[in-house]
Image (tube, rainbow, N blue to C red; front, side, top):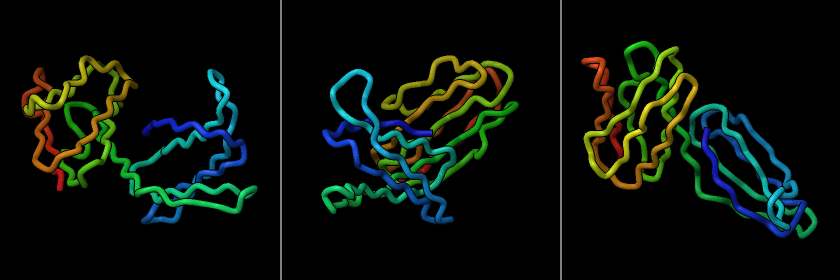
Length: 152
């Protein structure tokens, strides 16, 4: 649900992500990057939540913790956002997913945040909220289709 890429010179780095509230874990071993002479770990978060991240290099016997990653999602289905309201921590990325059979858009009242543009069915739109505050979003053609994200 979220993507970022960090290259490594080593092929034996293992990234482990553990979901804090359920102990579900995801492991990813470094693989060669197609474009560069580096190695990358790709971790796909298939569900929202707070993920504790740790990297390990067994060959060198070292590891490091990475700050907790927050992955949250808002699904667009019918004429509603689900959930319609959420509270998150600053720095969290929220993925808006159009799970409907028609096009939708996510438009923010706050001009500091870009709107999604038209989202085809199945499309996603990610927004990172670095600052605290309340952020209201709407889909204009459907009256009452709105939501809010409170960033603490």
